[in-house]
Amino acid sequence: MPNLTLPLTTIPFTPPAAASPPDPLPSLPRPPVPAGPRIKASIRELLSEHLYKDRKLEKAVVDLTRNLVAMKLHFPDMLEAREGDPPDFTMRAPLTAIQVSRQRVGALLADLEPGLAARQSVLDDILRIVGAAGPYNRDMLSAHRFPMMCIDPGGAPTGWPAETVLTLFAVCDWSKIDFSYADLSGLTNHGALRQGLDLRNANLQNSYWRGSDLRNSDLRGSNLKGAAMYDCNLEGAQLGQCNLEDADLRRCNLKGADLRKCNLKNADLRHAELKDATASDAVFDGANMTGVYASGTDFKRASLVEADLSAAVLTLADMEDAVGLCCSSGTVFSGAKLRNARLAVRETAPAIDHGRRFWRDFAPQPDLGAYRKKQFEALASIDKAQYPDCYIEAVRGLIDCIKNTHHPSAPIALKHWLDEPACWTDAGVNAYICRELLAPLLVRWNENRTHDGDPTPERLIQYLGETQPALDWQEYRAAIHKLIAMPVTLSLMASQKALRDMYVNSPGTARNGEPGVSAL
Image (cartoon, rainbow, N blue to C red; front, side):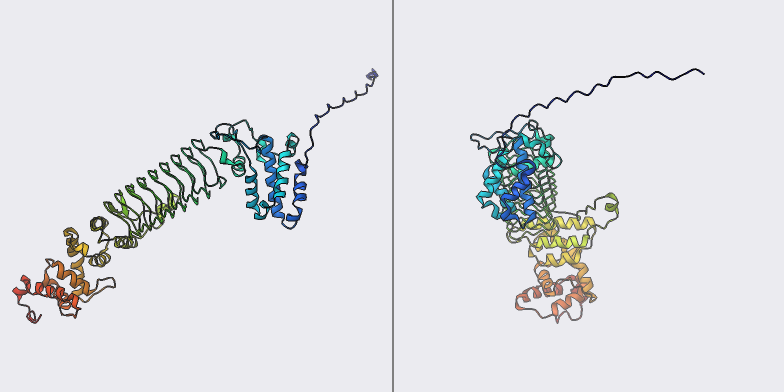
């Protein structure tokens, strides 16, 4: 058998070459205060006498300092004061005017603990740590914990993480940046922007502002279409000629705000406060103003076509020349100025939005009877003596609504309208009262059937004696006998006598020779 063993070949061993020494690192100046991963220890040391018992506050101060250090790496000049005109700001261009002032850092410390801002030594040490931050800190701050580290400072903020943009808004001193004409569309702001901002003519479409404090801010001419601004504080803000179409303004504080010529079509203003605001020439068409508190608000020449004013408080509001004003359920007009105002009446209660279609189809909707009752109460709050034409126009509209919906509102209507002599003088309203409301009432009284909501006999005597309607008195003689024979006060004697004379001299009574008529 042949030998298949391969001859061994000796391979000389070559030791590996010695590794070349690394290039020496450039000498970097050491910071006067440790930075990087030692920031936490440094902050603990300089605040040990204040924070040794409050670990939560200690963590908040450390995180604030680390965020400032991360910003300093991208914007080395942010602690330097600048002079001159502020540049325009846009979310679509690199930020070139980032500035963090000493006062702003002090305000941030005051938000954490009021006593910290008063300690100038604490503020000095924090600014010294931030000012000493340099390139050697970059690898010591992870992008996972500090979103600021993953941005490109030369790029537009539109591509930055939302947390980074909010950090900038919360920390930086924006007093030297002009937001007017800025493009902030789609901005998500969780209360970072502060009061007193200049946002004139800015594009803020579809932005998110929940809970922001924008008191005394200037938003004139800005585009806030579709913006979510619920729970915001806009007291004293200037919103003239602002586009707030489809905006969400629920529970907003708009006390004393300027809303002149503002577009609020289809806006959601539920339970917002507009006390003493100025909304002349504004457009509220289709807006949901349920529960709005607008006492003393100026609505002169405003358009409120199809606006839902259910439970809205409009006491002392100026609605002069307002268009499309709707008398909804529970609206309060006490003391409101309604000169030349056109008051409409909603025919049916607005549907309740239950979200998904399944629930919209099967969920119960508002009770029309309760809704109609509150409409009568809303009409009763109008100053009939000062604005009789406006009141009568609304009553006519309500009569049309009752006819169209075929809802039995006779007891409510009769009680309210017999108590308002303004309804007696209008031929159309008075004819409806006699034909549709008074006749069924007298039929029931003929049979001794009364309801709790019926008008008082005294009010009925006054109405019949003063209006002298053309009724078939023979059909209601039992009820009329009771009204004529009952004792009345001196003020009603003339009305009772007129009713008695009208009944006695009526053709049917005289022709039939009814017994007892002479005694009446």
